[in-house]
Image (cartoon, rainbow, N blue to C red; front, side, top):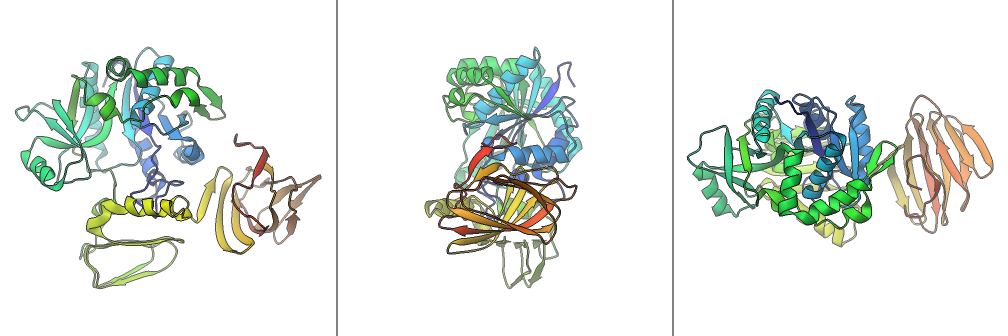
Amino acid sequence: MSALPLVPVILCGGSGTRLWPLSRESYPKQFLRLNGNSSLLQQTLRRSSGPCSSPPILLTHEDARFLVAEQVRETGIEDAVLILEPHRRGTAPAIVSAALYLRGQSEDALMLVLPSDHVIEDSDAFLDAVRTASEGAMEGLLMTFGIRPHAPETGYGYLCVDANSTRQIRRLNGFVEKPDQSTAQTYFSSGHHFWNSGMFLFRCSQLIDEVAQHAPEVLQACEQAVGGIKHDNDFLRLDAHAYAKSPDIAIDYALMEHTRHAAMVKLEAGWSDIGSWSSVWETAQHDSRDNAAHGDTLIEDCEGCLVHSGTRLVATMGLKDTVIIDTPDALLVMSRERAQDTRQLVHILREQERSEATLHKQVTRPWGSYDAIGQGPRFQVKRITVQPGASLSLQMHHHRAEHWIVVSGTARVIDGEKDYLLTENQSTFIGVGVIHSLENPGKIPLELIEVQSGSYLGEDDIIRLSDAYGRA
């Protein structure tokens, strides 16, 4: 491909509103297993390992760092670089920070920038496109990947290319924002407009030089943020104060719309950004009446529907072009043609301060997870899973007491001055204000029921005194 190393730079800091209620701010769509046993992030990691021999760089937000680390570990990748963005500032500062970090590790490299939440069905075609884009990048071009539209889609930006060019690498005449329906129809009919995939390939040095010219304020903030980078266990933390000074801007606006060196290679590889429930329906397997189903479902006399069951039977009858997504704490029913409008529902839920906008019933933590299984006035019941060798922080609560009943596994409990073990069917009580911790010293997951009681049961009533995961 090239004499320069090709490094995958994977962006996985999205907040995940368009696939609500399955995807939420605390568990965005890149972590979901929508089309197989691997998450979209894991599929991206494996796909990028084909053309790239260098360890991947992943950029994510503070809140998702343990999810990213766990999913990377599950793929068997041991040398990934995990860079934490202290603030959400768009793709431009994220990509520029990765370029500056890479330049500090070697003289120059090619960067293959990939969102973590796309589906690409044809890996060989993807590899061919990356090879071609690498050639363009070596010639000093800032390469992107264009998707030939198969419909007048209003949910994507468009790339405009020279109508007379037939080369594999085609210079761009412009980037176009998400159009209205009539404009999208014009683009679709033209034959020289392509969907903007959000994937890029360029030399680090070329990117940095171009950003210095077109977005110097982004470069300045990122240089300071990377210069102040700190190691935190398996993560690299960008300097928060410096990173906050960067404009919140996408790489398209900051650079690609202004540079004279933007070019495109066509990607025909079964691409989808899975940007809506309609996209999920399109990429799924269909029955004889174009219905797509996941989980325990019964679909009778329906056509063109997407039905997703989480933990219970979902039965449907007499529906057409309908999306039904069932989760333990929220049910979505909508017309498939309105699939792009899901974020409006999330906006309303946030205005109403509903927890369903951001949190699942099951919440992932670095030590395992908890599932809220019941609550009422002055009490709450959780099922807690602690992974082998993991431990909760040493903490205390001002307003609540906790009762722990071990369902399976072994628990080591710090309870004030006491330190003891609990096994299956044993229990203990942690009083209000008592310093305590919970650890799984065994080789199987620790499962326990926690009953909280008190005047206030919010998650912000946790005073961490020490923590293995840097949250104290």
